[in-house]
Length: 509
Image 1 (cartoon, rainbow, N blue to C red):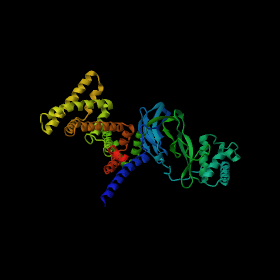
Image 2 (cartoon, one colour):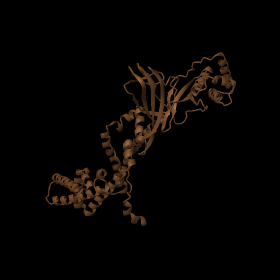
Image 3 (cartoon, helix red, strand yellow):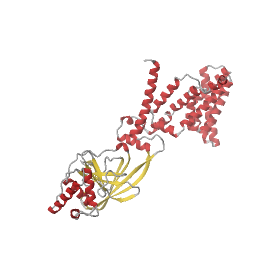
Image 4 (tube, one colour):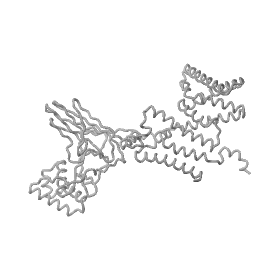
C-alpha cells in the first residue's frame, strides 16, 4: 500500500475513533457537550404512619423499580428502633421494617431520588400477560356486567377501543341502568377501578393496575394515582380510568405495577401512606456518569472518572497539553510565527493558568531579562555547556526565591505563584535566547522571544476557556482527533501566512 494512502487511512481512523467515542458518550449516556448544564432531579418522600399494638411489628412497603423515562439515583430509609431489610418478590422490591415490641404512634420514611433519562425508556413487558381472576357477581350483577360487556363490544373494533368505550360508559353522566346497578356498590374511585379490572377480566382481556405520581414541585400529602394497563396482543397500553385517555401521561412516575398491596402491616392499625415531592437541580455531567454506571458500561468503567479525585484533578491540567500542542503547530506550520523552542509556549501557558496572565507575563519578563544579564556575564568566563546551564538553573531558582520573598513582604500575592513556572524551561529559554543573540543577532532573538510569549498567551486563552476544559476532561478520546489534525498539518508543505509579506512584491507585479 502506498505510504500516502496509509497516512490518510491512519488519520481517518484516529478521527473516527475520537469523534465516534464522543458521540457514543453523548448519545447513549447523555454526556453534556457544554459545561454548566443542569437537569432536574426529583425527590419523593413516602411517609408511613400507623399505630402499633404493643407486640411485634412487621411493615413491608413496595418501592419503585425500572420506570419508563426515569432512572433512580439514590434511595434512603429512615426509622427509629427498627431493623431493616430489602427483599424482592415477583412484583418488585419491598422495604421491610421489623421490631420486637412497639407500641403507640409510629412513623417510617422512605426517600427516593430519580431523574429523567430517555435512554432508559424500559417497556413494561417483563411479565407475561394473563387474564385476571374473574370477580364473583351475584346473578343480578352478573347479568348487568355481561350485558354491558356485550353492548361495549358491539360499539368497539378491538381491545383498545373496547377499553376506551367501557371507561367512557362507566364515567358518563347519563348512565344506563346496568351501569348504575354495577356502580351502586362501586361508587369510589378506587372501587370503580377495581370494577373496571373485573369487567375486563370477564371480557377475557389481560389488564392490571399501575400506581404512580404526577411530578409537581412542592407537593405534600399526595396519594398514588391509579392507571390501567391493557394488553392489546402485542404490548401493554396505558389508560386513565377516569377519562379514558390512552398513553402514559407526561411527568408520571410509575411507583408500582400489578395488584400487589402497597403496604403490608402486621402488628399495627390505622396505617396511612402519604407522598411529598420536591425538585432539585444537579449537573448534567454528574447524572451522565450515573447513567453510565447504571448500565455497567465497560468503556466508562475504565475512564478517568474511575480514578480518585486527586488524580482526576491532576489529569485536568495534563489533558490540556495536546490542545496547546495543536495551537503551537498551527502557529508554526500555518502562520509561520517563530518561537523559542517547540513546546516552551505550552509549558509557559500552563504556568499562566496558575499565576494569571498579566502577573505571569510580568514575572516571566523579569526573570528572563535578569537571567539574560547573568548569562551574558557567564559567557565571558568560558564555561563548558553543562556547568553553564547548571549555573543558569541555580540563578533562576535564586531569582524565583527572591521574587517570592519580596512579593510577600510587599503584600503582592501574585508574586508567590512564581514557583509554578518550570525553572528548567526558564533556564533553557535563557540559554537559547542567549545563543541566538550571539549567533543571529539581537533582532532574531527578540523575534523568537516575543513570538514565544505571543503564542503562550494564545495557548493560555484557549486552554483557560471553560468549554475547552470541559471537552478535554469529559471526552479525552478527542485527543485522537487532535492527533489526527496535527499529523495532517505536519504533512502540509505549502506557504505560510507570514510568507505572504515576503512575496508581496511578486503578487503586485
